[in-house]
Length: 289
Image (cartoon, rainbow, N blue to C red):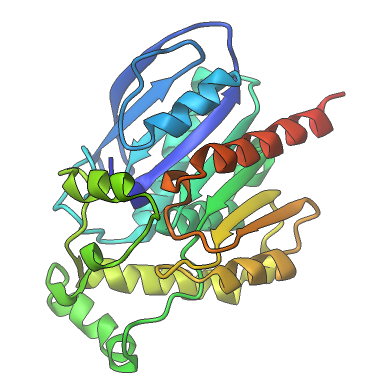
């Protein structure tokens, strides 16, 4: 599964034991590849299988979805026509999860650009009222282009040559984990897009990042944001700004000194997963009558 194209929902439901794959039709009738698993399932797979196992071992069910153009979902690999479509698909998927688990508390998780998608989904919608909170790892906030000319020309090129790949923007040259095995696994996985970023996709990332920073003070949902201070892909200072400026009554931040972008694939992944689980469990205790 694509690292930056995966979100997870945890629900406190250990009554049944199952694991399945399924396809969900997105808001534009696009096929979205999805997985789910509940406690005691043993055959969860995909890029985030280790974290999913951590969650199920603590009685949290897990649902995951690949974006359009990523993993097993429809679309040209690495091409996202609109991140607003991804936001809408996220809401559609969450509605399915809620329908299958009535009355069960839910959390929404997003990594990198997925973190930006989750934050925008929770910003101006009904999602805040149906979620216990959101968890963001290394969210794509305050993203800056490699050169000012790129930002100026991106809107035009995204219309004229939306699928064109910026040859100088290849992800393979960026260290995202201090674990060599995790790096090898990521860059050898055919479902993980690590090629040069496509023009429209890059423009969409810049657009959603700018929108969120302009509206950061309007964030009211409960959240936990986690970031490595040595991240070379997204800005840990932007995560700090989210924590400082958001209007949320319940908000927490964890900055990991010297850690890189893919926090859940760092050598300390178990500790980071544990921090996320502890936060969710505390939220559930706070909400208990």
